[in-house]
Image 1 (cartoon, rainbow, N blue to C red):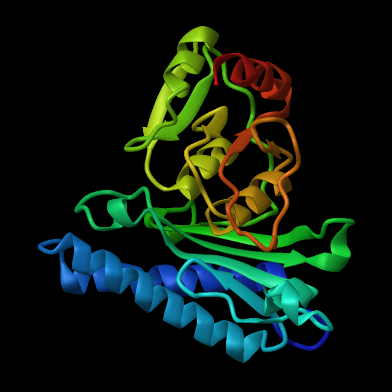
Image 2 (cartoon, rainbow, N blue to C red):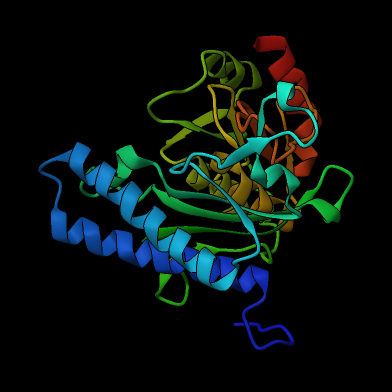
Length: 276
């Protein structure tokens, strides 16, 4: 792992380390608890992974803010204007870790499924006019990488080579957006159903799919880490109307997403506009 001048892991290496640690804990929990009670397994997975990640962030990145699916924002009154209500503390931070301790709880709770993930991303205000994702990792603990270890994808991967044949579009296996069937048919594409949003985005990164289209409702933690990984590989990522993805907003809802090879972006955006 790379270290910075202070001897600690740099942010990207830390994101990958954290995803790996949480993934190992989830794998052990799955083996110990079993699948007889899926709801209990989902709840235990969310909690154990969140607790591990929160503890690590508090220890190793104590000055940074955190946005997690499993934790309510800490909030305070707007300075100088009590009538304006309260705002999340993270909105005043320069660095915010956006985490999803367990993406794909349904798949995690089903025996034999490997399409669930752990998301870790770092957003930095000073990295751009609207801030930017500066580090990210997606851990897929039930899958194995080329090194024989549980798979963790970071932001320093090459773009996969283009594939021949019809476009392959990763879609939700359980909650596909209503227009996606028309989109797939209209483009002469092939739908590739998968679980976890992180797994679907990473399928584009690894070349298993050419695009991922979602419009059924998501939050920042669903896409931040996968988008950081995709952008690092040179892929295109945006809202389905073509507008930029913006993170660390007051309302963390970020309901739609397109990730694709850059050469397909214009075609897909035009088709999405036609069919949705």
